[in-house]
Image (cartoon, rainbow, N blue to C red):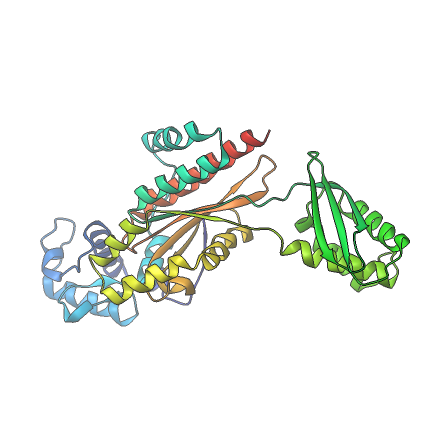
Length: 356
């Protein structure tokens, strides 16, 4: 699991007593959502300490930013930094149970005849899992190409023809400098065909730009300009969609514990789909599940929600999309994290089958 690190205390900063009290408080909070008091802890068989000793330890944990006391309550809750420390150092995350794996397969696999149905069902299932909202981005189209050709269509427009290895053909109109000779278009098309063959635009674009910038590409000025203009036009041409399910239950869940203003903030954040797509696309930086707690992700810093995301891949281990959940910080992380990861694996496998 890939985790965003922040400056905060580590487990080595805590003695055995502090670690035990901290774990008890976080476990209780995740189970109940309520502040935990010293008297409650002192009555447990696993805690052999007086309420006064527990209060002193809780005060120490609050002083280093791991606990907080909401609304002058006698009880304590973990801060977002405390939850992060718990997840990183004390939470044991394994594979989903056999029953959970079967439930995921049973929900998602029957819809495999259509990609849209797979994604929609996965989003709905994740929403129910977390008691929040399920998120799935549609797959990015990154099919390897085998041929590129430029054809003039008017004095200021050029048709770019992109032929993929799977036989699909995509035509894109782009603005081109006026008066380009046919030889320049042929030169630019041949250059791109040689550099892109067997690779997607995204995979090859950075390398092509470096070649042109360092004048290592065997192109004249006009052909280089056409290539760069084409890359710029194509990179922004992919439309990504976001499938969201379960907004209502997420808002109900947050409304039960937070004020109305924060609920409205959360709703506004969910509506900004571009920001959510960008968040999900962060999974492209590393394989595996990523977890953002509260202010760790600017998109949800005000409403204080947790976001768990994972990429889904094709059979060649290329990341083609991402999915995840938005929920309250009081999530069952030990269960939800592995289930989000497994769902991503199931979705990737089903989409790969549907494409072949």
